[in-house]
Length: 392
Ligand SMILES: Cc1cc2nc3c(=O)[nH]c(=O)nc-3n(C[C@H](O)[C@H](O)[C@H](O)COP(=O)(O)OP(=O)(O)OC[C@H]3O[C@@H](n4cnc5c(N)ncnc54)[C@H](O)[C@@H]3O)c2cc1C
Image (cartoon, helix red, strand yellow):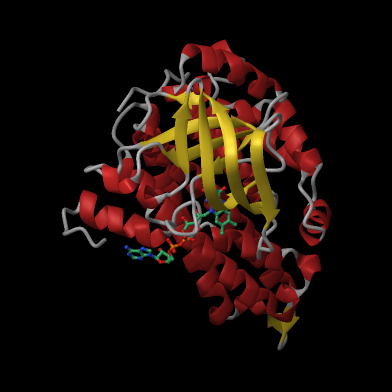
């Protein structure tokens, strides 16, 4: 696996300053903003602009390409703080994940062409197209084909659940350049492309999906879409390994979002349980309310340790697959547990939109399934870490 780019080191004080500054930024986007955006299924354009302008979305872009040159530890703190503030980094987090493929496997010309513009907020790389109706968790089964014709690839196929396509200029696309049946090693024959959606040749049809969360998710149909050969990332046929390289980053960042959510739920549950008086005492004095909150708090804190362990290993260029996967598993489940107890604590009010619990409840549930489902994480731990027989 290629070495990650050299990252600058930050002190605990620097990290505290990042937390403080992200909190201040999020203060301009209170609960009412997110409630409105969620209800109207709007894209939180003003928020995404503000995070972009602050430079935080370009945290992982090296300084030589105009970014902040931070490590995963700092990037994870940024996303955690966003979610902890009641906001939803799902609106823009993919820019952090997807960038890594371009950064690690793109050539110099591609990096110079795109990264400075992304860092300046002039270009958005928010769409990452992997999932298909007939492949799902078995990503090597993708059927979208890219066939080379002279200086272009012609893409045909269908993707599903692809988020932020309409809010992005560029899409990172995974497509088969050699059919599944023609390769021995099924991870081969898959390639990664940058599709510039500002001037597409061919037909790119984007159909929004009606989803439980405000995630701007679509079905995408490719009909003879032309992608210039200079937009192929790395070598043809090796794209799957490039995507795998980015998985640890993705898992650590998703874990951080879940930890942020978990802290938001616990914070709200503690306040509500302390204020709501029934039967002559705050409901939080009852063990049936208090203990589950305490339990969820302990689980979030434990997941946080695993997140920082994984991030430190990644930033230190050590192998971190086991820790990154465990962090994602533990954090997403702890956040979901915290969501449940928060809803229980609020009783019927938890279902009222004005308290925001039901919105965050839906948002955090997603993290157990996407971008990778926890069953697949368990399969990775069972097989790759513990050496048990492959279950799939
Ligand atoms: C809101 C939203 C946004 C998304 N955004 C994107 C995006 O931007 N880009 C993108 O490419 N994808 C995106 N996805 C897709 C997401 O990554 C997939 O939904 C996820 O990877 C699971 O795939 P699937 O839905 O096809 O489920 P399936 O693969 O059909 O799995 C269904 C269930 O079976 C389980 N399962 C499958 N195989 C096994 C096994 N061997 N052992 C045990 N359990 C198994 C899974 O864990 C899951 O619980 C998004 C999804 C959602 C809901």
